[in-house]
Image (cartoon, rainbow, N blue to C red):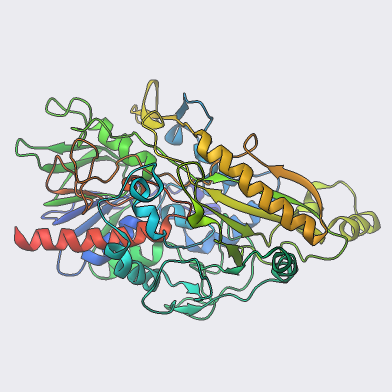
Length: 547
């Protein structure tokens, strides 16, 4: 693939030989080639001239095995696998909690889906009406029924393996496109303990193939789902990027958009982007869709400040960057006096949503996860020790195969003091202010982590495990789900976009991102991102048709 970043001898290629000049007479310009941008581009390509600009490179798919090898070597950190770090990805922290932004993000065509785990749940009905039903948070200007057909469409587009065995899931209209993955061996151990405690287990919807689907192979069990799937069985957004290109869309990589320009009629006129050769170009279009994620989207709007919008583009409400949310982790684990086949599966296959809808003003919604990948893998153990031969064999025999663990995600409430701003004294490799993260968590989330820990420990103890660690309120961290920084609202004074994800201030600019979430719920956000992106695509198409 021309211009693709390679890990081999061709690594020096920086894509300078690729044509990155603007596309004339573009109907739509999409900023970002992650899952949202890719789905919007694919939805609109064909009859319309669509151009997609992405800040990062195209990654050569032939290098995925090499990236897997890099991932399993302890000398490399997770960001190294996809080349994250340096001045390009610099950021600042100035909040109550430290936020390790670069630990789990990818800049490049495919975005976060290149390294995600692939879990795709729908938000629950009450997640859309948190203020009304739970007494905290905010109500979305849409409800579950509005998004329900788009959820189904998103499951078909991504390719989701799942089952209808979850009695706590919201109503659905059709089966998942593929059957669910079978419960793992360690799931069967958990099931016995959960049955004794009256706790329900059920399957987990996965955006990975349990059988051949969409010209992609079924999962072959590499087990390195995070941060790389060498087989392509796990969905990533290059699927829709390539499909959009086949239908005529133009995708320009290594083209970071530095600002959006607008005219006096409150319309965006151009996206100004840089290229590896140091040039800057203006991509004009009739409609613009910003799909750069929960951190880079507000940053771009703030960088686009003008005389008319001195506080940032689309920021008439003053809320751009505010209400930054993530999911908080709760977990516990230990060892059993029997084999658990740890790391036999690289993703979890069973969960528990039983306590999710007990949420109220004091307790946040949360879900529980039964891990298949507790403890070190044999490869990790072999590479981190300094013994060999019989000594290594003995260490692997004695130290591998009896670990067990649970995880869980907890909702964080929206808080205006939790936000993304521009750093005052640090710039990126092009001289633009980097994002500054002020992350505030809140007591409701921390109290709910304690509740999740109690359940997790009770299950492990019923299982007969020696509980060796608990990730409670003092040891929690983010799930790297960036949400809420350009929130959706019917009231222009209370949000950045309307119910159709079109900005209140500019009538030809939409935002397709988890940044529009008014609340976060406790479900992984990608399926909701995909559903909203498909909805945005339809709205943009309708707007263009009416022009």
